Image 1 (cartoon, one colour):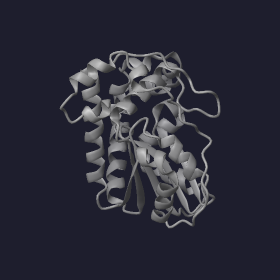
Image 2: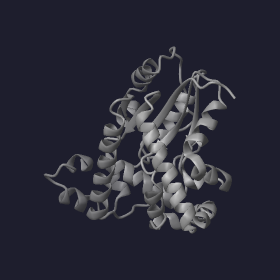
Image 3: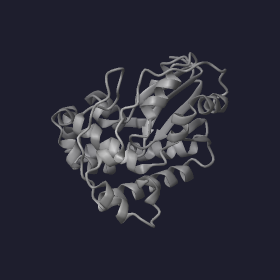
Image 4: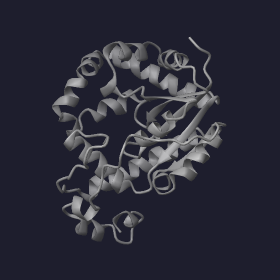
Length: 271
């Protein structure tokens, strides 16, 4: 195993452009970026057991296998809470047969209360470790328009297409969104953002906005490379933007929602 260089966490919520940014960073010769080390739908049984035994050792072992100057991974807000992850399984979107199949090991393991408690303790302990370990660099990726994030998440679940690599963009069918669902999602994402900003306030942390990355990627990527003390290099991603339709085309009741959110803090999402 190698001694680890700079340790990087790409922190975000769902559908914020994290795959795109991870791809860009990974194209730098001095960077190695894992995907989501704590995404239960991507983990095999052995990895789940390792995490329950000692999440910190699980990550250290992964990072030490790479020799680049910067080694990191993606971390979503819910990943380090066994309770929130388990609650998520009851969401209607997780009834997709492929997702259900990929979660079979996890569902079997957490049905054992002792394993669930062990996993929960290990994840909580690792979150405490991250809070206190100032050697981690944090790039906190946020998306200003939470409606776009919610819409992208629902369409990804419905179509089971999470990234687009070269193929023609998918034409999505219009869906209905309730005000309750939207408000709950907007508030939850803001709460997560504030929580993690506070948790990592003493770390080397850089905030990046998806909209800025999309509009002026060169400027933002240069800022990230400077933050990580890395030499400039042209960065490329094989991923392409998935959404080509307007929100008014994608949301059946868009006009009703726009009226409902008029003169509220969320009005800006429905312009």
